[in-house]
Length: 426
Image (cartoon, rainbow, N blue to C red):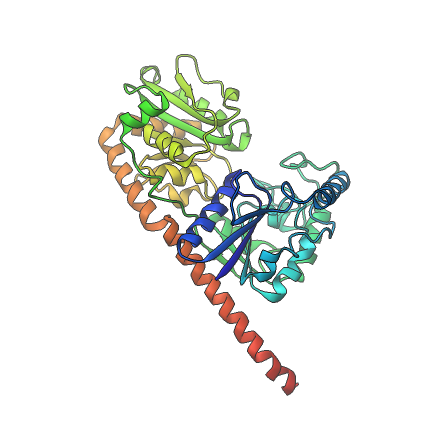
């Protein structure tokens, strides 16, 4: 089967990593999976960039469209150029699989034409497809009624003026002319998609992310710490985020939780920081820390998760965080807020500890409980690994998607075979 994935990036960012992992899993299963992206960070015969590696005329055209759309605050609206729709991999595909298309390289007006010849699946990595602008709405419910008066106009790609209601109506118009199947990785996002006035018209399936459990696996802790220059004699809690300065990632609540923990425990433990802008995290005095900055190699990431006694994920809104999956696959328990799709993976006292969202006191309790109870932490770590293999391995994810692909291709074939008979009967 020929599958082409469309995403803004190939490996940069959580959505790109999730899409690329699925792409890898499908290729491992013997299928012709390819990626058409706006910007590619890695060279690959199965990944094509239509912006950063495009011929100069196409690149300039794309930049003109992006500049115009941002100036008008109408991203993804201008119906040109047709770089993606006309790409030979897209035209030859049996399945077109959308992921993040937040950039201007794929106008929403092209969704209808993409679905004329083959099924189109859209895996949601956040809420952007069903809002007028934001990726996560938090407590705002305007996405259910048409947006406008947006409280997050500066979020993600900032808007020069509030065109969120225009974007919302434009999406409704574009989706109304399209044939899509929506996939949500988490139960939380699947339920939101079904409630959405925009996407609720389409079938919504839930298929969790997958990852390579041969790479993300428990490593001997002392060896992992030696590899990364971390001390062997401390209990270490890992905090990781693409951008630690992003308030959505909740680093401030982690700091508050540390301040609520017993002083003796703070002196005995240490914090490992991973990601960009970790200097923005003001840890309490006396808490030792080690900054690993950004790690792009999956095997080193696995070492970081294996080196930690706990992983803390105080995110305030998330779909199905890659970091939580990576931690669980490495057998490292997770202490997290109960937000978004986190609870799909972090199951109380089975794979970790869940605190009510924004409750720093409860987060501190979870950290203290698991740091001080070695037997409990070990038991949870073993269960983490078993859950990852059973539910979140790449072969499991690939099989789930291949079942869906086959179902949609067969339904499309039946529809084509029945169309002439219906035309004659009419």
